[in-house]
Amino acid sequence: MSAQTRTVAVWAAPEDRSIAAQPFAACVGFYYSVRLILPLLAVRLFRQDPQDGVMANLALNYVFLAVAFFATMGATRPFRSMLDLPCVRWVLYFLAFSGVSLLWSVTASFSAATAFWCAMAADTTIVLLLFRDGPVTEISESLMRGYIWGSCAIALVAWVLPTQSDLRLGDEELLGPNQIGWTCAFAFFLAQYLVRNRKGSGIAQAAFLAVTMLRSLSKTSIVAFVAAEGYMLLCDRGIRRRTKLLVASSACLVLIVFSGLLAKYYVIYSNAGNQSETLTGRLGIWLFIATEALQKPWIGHGFHSVWKVIPPFGEFEARHAHNELLQQFYAYGLTGIALLAAVYGSVWRQVRRMADGPMRVFFLGMLLLVVVRGLADTEPFDLSLPLWFIVIIGALVEHSRNTAVV
Image (cartoon, rainbow, N blue to C red):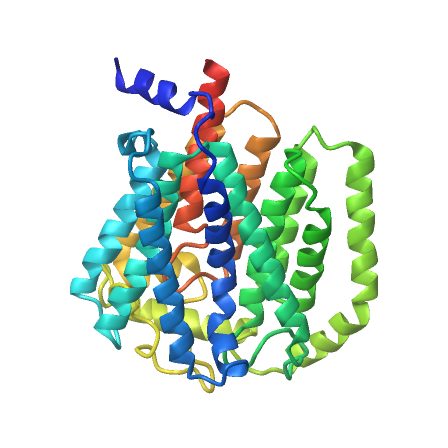
């Protein structure tokens, strides 16, 4: 049997295996989202040090990995079938190179950097293990549902917190508005996927997440959201014109309700000088990190080499380069740029091979979402399109294509 035939047989097999892993998958998805506020809860609710929240976060990650390993022992789907997916292979290449970069990483703490890399690798490994033991669509949807509920919990906490000095949601020290806005935007699209595929009612959660994203006043997340959502509404022919008009009118109504707040924030933003949240401040961060990146253009400064290494910009201490391409160039040099292009390119090529339909439009919209977001923001370790979610995309697309073939 050829490799291609074997892959089709595995991914197109009827999904009648045990569904015991689905509740666990939902817990994993919930954790992937809600861990964002664990340091905040440790400090504000339990009066602990922020590092205690970080340690609890890492410990939970390793616990989930151990549970996934033991729960999927004797799984029926061979691990090799996952490696047949190009996007999964590139994810593993990215993980491998970022791990090796610890050998030359210019980091404030080697032990902390190693722990964070292990956690990032664990995220992907957990999803790979889940797919070995459960039905692809059900596992993916359970992960999405968990992530959506976790993001709703973050949104609820964000509304409860006192408003920041610039009128945005979040905590001045432990939870930035850009983190809130991006988490809500990403979770909104997952809720939209479930609703679009008639996998349960998620309209209320999607609306709550969208309003919270706008209230966060995270400019990058809002622009990326509008671009991706606009693309999906225009290109998804399965959405009725009445539904599109309803979505557009609802968005206009929300903007009218928040118009006063937006006007006040614009005044504050216009007078913010060179602060990091303004374009002038971002240009300063980009210029400094680009200059530093050119000092090691081939393999970069290594994993976790910004935080506590790059000097503060006034009162602001950067965790990353606030641009995905620049972040990869600084951390991994030209090799990082090549890996970034290969990872996203592999996802794009796999999705482009799908038949025209809402699923194809959705995943292309997700790519647009992360690309636009990556122009002015990114993640300290992972990609804007998380590595674990790239595995989900690869599995869903391959299952869809091969099921159609059979």
